[in-house]
Image (tube, rainbow, N blue to C red; front, side):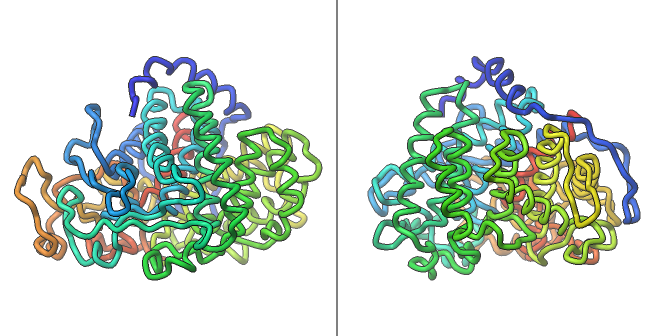
Length: 501
């Protein structure tokens, strides 16, 4: 990674991102229907720094000299050798030592979108955020380097999950899995195309040659996704399910990928594709959540901007669909569920991913509405951008400690945060402290202990409390205590907004 490029071009980058983040407006608050558990004013700037630092703790491969999460060391240096391809690098998705391409690509898209919308507000954190994107895109370029083939996963998940060992000590098979024209994967290919296209916008002014490489690869990968249609989990079910099955199908990723290519290329081909295929790809289906699996809502918000600001009349329906999603998550809506303490609650496992992704969408849509000088409509009710910002802020504040337990769900932020997160590297002594290899099963003695993790994975946001605001802080409780890259990625954008609002 040519990390030195960023510092020399920071002024150019910052100017560009200030330009593309126009429409920013300060937030105003509104009384909540929930009881407040307010702590002192939050240091959103500190939380932003930590949310980006977290990604360094998830790095796979050979770590750079400026690595700040110093308890991590090199790992996975032979990844890809099983199929004679270089797949070194990228991110471990969560608390295991797997490299799952589907959530990694979504993480990349959301980090890039965070930078596109709010990067101009990140100031000194802008180079670090760009490094986080580039660590992922460098890997995605490797994974898509062979025509009509995408390497989608490194590692055997069942054997990996049977061990509790540091990534630096991995001795489980680093099996490589791929999709191709005979075993298609439109969902993962569509998401990778979206990630590369979004990242090409991030690097357009700072590193034009790299940006162009990303964009050309995005175009190639999307063509593959659309030409050879099918869900990747159909052919790879034993390897990717139940971990990252494509439960929502591949149609949403085709729409999402086309939306990002439309934004990145200005080529009418993609707008025409969206017009012709939107209905088939589920554009007007109702979805009330946005995640690594289901991208419909994200595509609607993204395309609504084209109608609101670029005045593309043919995309007017996407504004209506975006409003429908917004209405579905408002406190008090029949389709929304909140904990007694005020946290949006969608799923019992890793619920915080929906909190961070929804908060990002609320702030982003509020930005678009503000730029267009309009509002959202929920039946006969008007929902202002200020109200959307207020709801998003309350969700982020809950995450940072404004909750019944006074618990920050970001490791290292505040005085009280999870100490026993479900994460192998964090829970075991570092190589510097314990240079001797820790074998596959030897780490389980730490897994079952009540001792705090020896290494803080600073910035990691865990799955979060249950529907009653309860959080036991137990290492074995992966549904609530495991961090993931796709929880943090949209939070980066939300915190950038809040830090400067």
